[in-house]
Image (cartoon, rainbow, N blue to C red; front, side):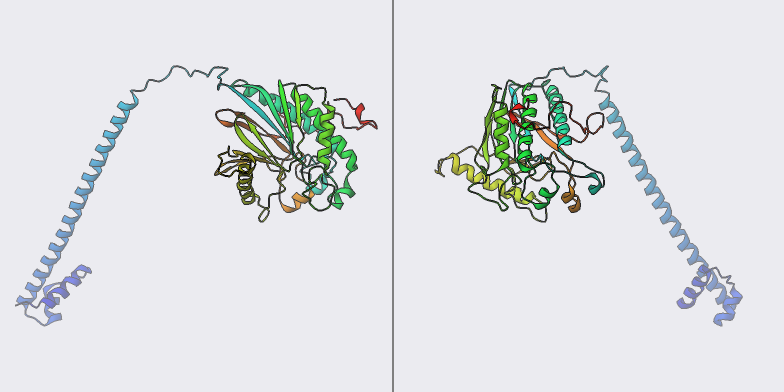
Length: 418
C-alpha cells in the first residue's frame, strides 16, 4: 500500500517543476521499482486532476463573466432604446422666442435708496493703503454723481417689469468724518462745521437729482456714531447732539422748494417704517456688538431685540396685542454691502462711500466703496436689490472729479445752488 506522505511529497516537487522519475523515487524513498513506478503515476495523476479542476473553475468564471457582461450590454441597449424613444417625443423648437419687452409683475414697487457712511471730510491717502483706494471730498462728490447715474440706469431696467413712481431715501449716519478720534482732527482737510455743511449740500444735490426720476420721495434719517460731539457715546442726546442731524436739517432746508420731497428727520435712535405693508427698522448699526470683528451674531441678536421693541411700541404697551413683525432690518456702520437671512426676515447692510481706509486696511477688512439700492413690492417684499459699486463706472474708469456737484462751500451757505 502506498504511503500518503510520500505521494504528497512527490506532488509538491512536481508542482515546483522538478523532474521526478521512478528511479529518483526508488533511490530517495528506498522503495522497490514497482512501488516507485506506482508513486510516480499516482502523483502525476493527482497533479493533472488538480490542474484540470483549476482550469474548469476558470472556465466557469469566464463563462459567468461573459454572461454578466452580456446582460449588462443588453440592459444598456434597452435603456438607450427607451431613452431614444422618449427623447423623440419632444419636438425640437424651430426658434427660441424672446420674452416680451414689458412683462409687468403687477401693481407697483417703491424704490429704496440707501445713503450712509459717506465720511465727508476724511482723507485716505493712496500710498498708505497700497494704492487700492483714495478718498477726499472731491472723490466723494464724483462717486455720488456715479451713484445717481447708476440709480437712473437700474431704475430704467426695472421699469420694464413693474411701475416705480415713488422712492424712500434713507440717510443712515456717519455722513461726516467727525471729531471722535484725534487722528481725524489731525488729518482732515475740512473742519467739523465745514464737513457738516458740505455733507448736507452733497445729500441735497444727490436727492434733488434722483428725485427727478420719481413723483414722490420720502427721506428718512438716523444718525451715526462719527457725527457725535462727545468723545463717549451718549443716549439722551445721541440724536440731537450730532453733526449728522445738523447736516440733515441743512439738506432739508436746501430742498424746501421741492414739493414732491418730504423729509422726516427723526430724533429717535432707530426708526420703524412700513413700506407697502412690510415693516422695516432702520438704524445706523453702531449699537450692534461684534465678536472677533464679526458682526453676524450681534446683528441677529439685535434683530431679535428690535422685534421685541417693535411689539412694545406698536402695541401701546399691551403685549397681548398682535402687531406686524419686523420683516427687514437695515443698517450701515460696517461698510459692507449685502443681505443676511434671519429666522424672521432679512438684515440688509449698506456699504460706505469712503471704501477701505488705513484702519480697515491694517485690520485686513477690505471693502469697495458702494451703496445699496432695492425695491419693495406689496405682495413679495424686497424684490430687485443691487449693491452699487462706486469705484468704477461702466467703462471701468475711476471717477476722480465731479462734473455736476459743487463741493466749494461759500461763505454764505444759502448761496450754494442745489
